[in-house]
Figure 1 (cartoon, one colour):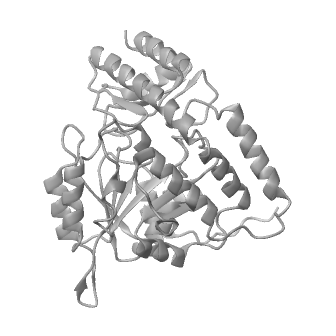
Figure 2: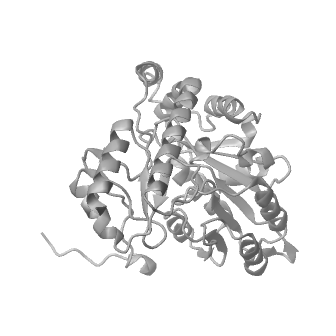
Length: 374
């Protein structure tokens, strides 16, 4: 074979390694915040029927604007949080990853800044790099909550085109109160880049990938959309519906934001099979929400147990728990892995994150942690 020629890789990618959390077959895989429960047999049957129905038409392109799916998502949101949205305010893509890429494709770009916070989702810098923008983070408070003064100050000083906030935050599980969100949104109305001599808004993206796991009484940012048209709320079916393998993320925002995304989306980006499977899964929303209630109870029990062992455990409203600190978290991670339990080294120095699994997996984690740290 001839020697491969040198390829023109972008210079800024030379030191980058591909993203990838470990995918290992172990007794308890608790590292990527998956829903531990497989779809019900009834949901699987409905998905199979739906996919079979569209199979005969796969020689044709899918519905480019997937109106039926958007309506199904609207129906789900009305059930889940009581807010009604027309389909023109809803968008979907192949996972919330693609939703984020489309948002940044529309509003970021060379010479622009995207603002975030430290100790947040590890993919945000990757999204921003892909948009040829600069990612700037501000510190959180010692309890891992957002520092409102620092954040709003950075908005005014840096004039970012986009603000990325995970709520609940990954990996800490902490949330931003509605009052603080309102203040952030009010400030952000005039803190975007100056274009043709005029101030623009910073597009505030609230990433609610774990939104359905929030405590009762903690409102979704969806409640603020009518008042703040520069707000965009991102969600996913990966966690709440146990559909990580489906790759379906979605966005709720003002029609102007949806239209701007359509300027940069690739045509026919959602396959007919994905659309059919998602619609079928959404018809089982009630049973999925009942299941999430049980996961929240087990999350709270695990968090209480970890706190009782003497660990620092931030108040979490997601489907995972951050705990620590450890003098050598990598050793603890490896000791757990040797016992068949895979968790995640991520977030603040010295801390580890564990996803909520099945009852059997949760118990395996507790037993392994006790053995590894005694």
